Image 1 (cartoon, rainbow, N blue to C red):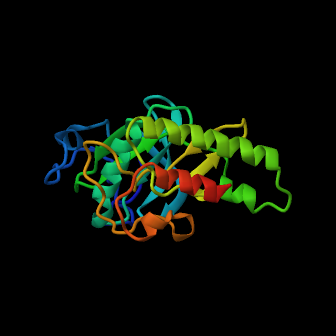
Image 2: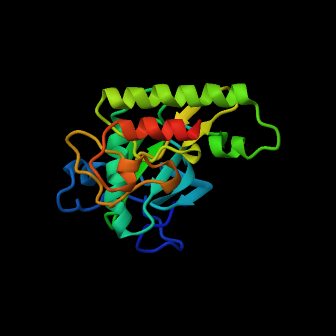
Length: 223
């Protein structure tokens, strides 16, 4: 079995063998309790590396399907990744990427498995030589509906941008990367003025307390 490297060693380490790690201080016990058969996951490639983690394509032998698995780049990202998994898992909506499983490597590094979104980001669509404006508008409206659902659950994304809206070949729209989100009953990630400067509402750029209106501003900036 091959698996993504942990944040303590990126070369050749198989952190998903066993998938049981000691719980981190202040973290839910479920992270340490979540375990899986060591033979369950097969690494199939790297999707990409972002500011707070790397995403791999893995094959789930138990359910016989490909998923995306996100792991932290380093220890500082681990708490944010747990936060992202918990926020995303509570948002059961067709326009928000679904989380299927979560756990911890033997060294305590968390991971979570989610739907593998095949397609292009809204940013990639915008960068095409010929842009189908009607198609773009459909995706933006679908993203707005997903965000409205999140707001109905008290969740604020805080980093909406074209790169965080994935589009699929059958018209799917998925809002991804909820790692900066504000959510009820969950500690806020300590990231200062989090977000993307060109998409920030003025109050977000000033570091002021935020609510759903900052997402509305970002959706307007996308349009």
